[in-house]
Image (cartoon, rainbow over all chains, first blue to last red; front, side, top):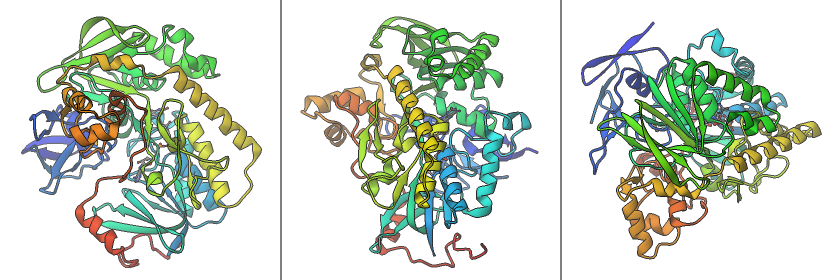
Length: 80
Length: 457
Ligand SMILES: Cc1cc2nc3c(=O)[nH]c(=O)nc-3n(C[C@H](O)[C@H](O)[C@H](O)COP(=O)(O)OP(=O)(O)OC[C@H]3O[C@@H](n4cnc5c(N)ncnc54)[C@H](O)[C@@H]3O)c2cc1C
Ligand code: FES
């Protein structure tokens, strides 16, 4: 039942219904961007769309919240 | 088309309110940013197993949701960021739709049921990946079926730590400890027992015992360590004001922390609804006994009116639904609600946040994660004469980033030495400049682009 998305070309399995953030976290990818000033790693924190730590670019679009966005087969995400 | 009622929030409060009003014959739409109804408590994975559905009331909630789906329009994956009141007195609810495009919905009456979010406290290393809010850990587990980590430390204050820790342990995580900053009495004297929730408390205690999870009071996670993610935490023994007495280091890969909840009241503030201060100091929307806010046509239910658990939220939703439909509200409902509120207030009193946490911070500890403002800059602002959160914000810019102070607002108020004030220019969600420009022009009421304007019912 699972499908895959890729992060920087690497495959990550997804159970249908999972968010991109949850799938990445489950695969051991715990950060996918760095902060503007300190270059500190960021991934999930609040998990419900409040903190904006988890911003990620999917299929080249402007950054969205990975904890809210349901993953779709073939989604390509890139770290920044 | 104008709905009789638009409900914002699809948790226990919003669903109960919407269904009650719809059953009374009103044309209702319910809007939620999530992909499924449920809110924070009845959050469930898309393909949840039957075992999960048996969990406290989920199956019943799903049935209510189905009934609601037959009688009202459900706008899921719609994020409301602004509500305006039109000249005729009705309201326009502005959302970002599933594809990010603007959607506007008109309503004669509104029910605000937007719930709450975790209240985190800053500590050194709290921005390391692997440090999650307690609710975030719960959302991974319940909503996604993902066990957040292998070796997990749970910390903070309040009864919510118990379902989080037991959920993690039952899902196979090794929970190294539950560190409750308040109290000195342990689970055997947990306030849930005193409040007639003995069964619930005993269930948690038994589960923690079965998984050999230690529950320790007057303890807190006061620092997280690691390079690119958390590898260990410092757990401190605290005095009753939360000053550190002694520390030890615990190796772990995940931390779940929460110090209570912050009600989400932005939409009510936009509409000019009056607020009051809850027992824990949080600004909440003032409502009368029928859940009416101070703005005619606007009701509120659930956590925006004060935090007290999902049963209270649902009761408030039902009362609001009756009142919105101009039906009498049974005394038994209001009495149960009043008991629920007393229970919520008692819990807030039993689990206060004590000032000693400020001593856990170092000069370089980030207070604001978005704008990366360390404690030193907040102190600098105070030294320059900023004596309230607003002036600190203007000088040092904490709370000016994407989250708009939702995460650091409480901490910044404490550090500025004042109770938390309701925000002055609240936007419920940051939006694109394009969407803002669209409202400035007034979003056209174009049925062709309005997915809710569906005559099929
Ligand atoms: C992350 C988290 C996890 C929790 N887990 C538990 C738990 O496991 N057990 C427990 O006993 N209690 C839990 N709680 C406490 C819980 O919030 C309450 O018990 C209960 O869910 C409150 O119900 P409600 O209807 O008032 O609000 P909620 O259930 O929070 O529902 C509010 C809904 O409004 C939606 N919403 C908010 N703002 C907008 C907007 N601008 N546009 C569109 N939609 C919006 C949200 O998506 C949400 O679905 C949790 C709280 C949080 C924050
Ligand atoms: S983790 Fe906080 S917004 Fe996604």
